[in-house]
Image (cartoon, rainbow, N blue to C red):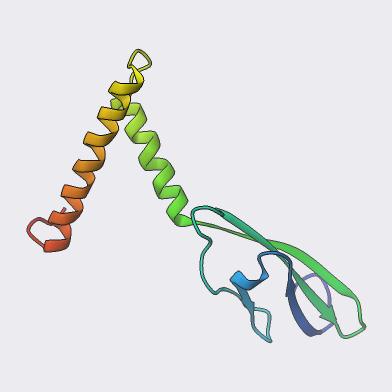
Length: 116
């Protein structure tokens, strides 16, 4: 803890996203597990209770790494394969083709036939 000479008597974590985090007796904040795709960012509040009873708080936030990857994947797909002039059907056909290519690549990588 910086900015004070007081000792921290206790650490607390609270808020909707508190279950995602753990805080040790000496103030190390750890992530129990990451947020899901449907909830890409979770927040909680860390409170340090000082020896004189004062409380110092800080907001903590974590993001889903899966969301970052999937959003990049979608953006790359759209930039490469979707044109503004395409019909809805053409866009759907291109998406189906693209997804089938990803499944083929995953199958190849998982079976160990080809390593990229």
